[in-house]
Length: 529
Image 1 (cartoon, one colour):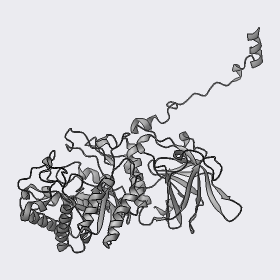
Image 2 (cartoon, helix red, strand yellow; image 1 turned 90 degrees about the vertical axis):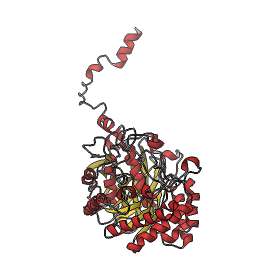
Image 3 (cartoon, rainbow, N blue to C red; image 1 turned 45 degrees about the horizontal axis):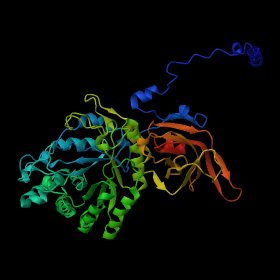
Image 4 (tube, rainbow, N blue to C red; image 1 turned 180 degrees about the vertical axis):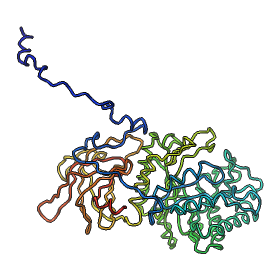
């Protein structure tokens, strides 16, 4: 009887009143399966990440070819084309020309350019320099490395037979050989290249003692590199007086500070116009400002007008090279690129050069694998293709040309649906980094959470409060995702005041990601054409 009573109370035949479920389309149970199959991660999508009511897709974010961008601080490295063919330049250029970047770092390759004493072959470099310039990309040179013709007794370093030794350690023969080479380079390219960097990462194994196997530390002290810079600057300027001399090319974090201090103690500032830094690390933001300020303080003390460039930095997309990155995917690489560029823009770097334009293959790695730090995939040597990081590069290059400037702003990230001014949530869901730019009278607000990219960030809803800089407008707000290159209309925005003199604009619910998104006005799209 008890069972019959329950049936009556719940309503006999209730199930018959329910409609038959609509059939689900194929793949609906995993709508982003294609994303995961291709990228090993899923890309941000408002529909599936819980922001459908707040964001409406309106268009893809445009990009411009480098030739169509007048000027910009953004660049990319074309390294490793010197003494070995790590990738095929002729296959890279048709893709790279659509990047929008304006600077390209090249390695000069003394050992490749001079195989017979006093005879220089720059033909291979002419193709690269002229090819880049024809597409609106300005090359700058890293002069290096050594040359066995002038380094008697030195043994080339495997696996590629490099001579990572200072010419100054080989007497008059070494100094004269190097000086003549630098003069020949400056003479040959003086009408096409105007920035000359001395060596690469002298503090990180690329400027070694000849007896490095038996000696610790294996690298040359800073005074040796400072002397090399002095000699190189004089050689280049004797041919090209207006040349900009670049030095430093420092790799590493605070462990490099003693070496950098030694460079300035030995008078490097007297010979250079630009100091470069390579801030490798898992999280671009960590300690970056303090490291740059350390160098800037030394520059200020020298009394010289020296600017800072970020000369090289990147991460792989599908291998855990040298322990850099656990989630080595195309998406994590693209996230890193956006955060790297934004960090350098925040630090007012005159140039930011991302490493690297293309994967390195063709026998560069001894095991035959492809070194995947490129923004162009070369896994298939016959068919190069742009990665997600390349599309992100296009977005940044289009957005941050010389017409966009950083300004002081107020763009606050707060917990979603919490009382104003009250927050008891943990920091990882309640805040982030925000940077304000403007393009004419159009504001551009960048925001993201600076978590470690390898952690696997879950999209979080946040409320955003902001004050519009004077003279700017935000009438039709949009959200730009630089990686997926999609633009969304922001459907809800409120004007909030405390009833006195203060007021803010409020975006009630927005996505917080571990890479920058941009809030701006729809008129921005017209300004980028």
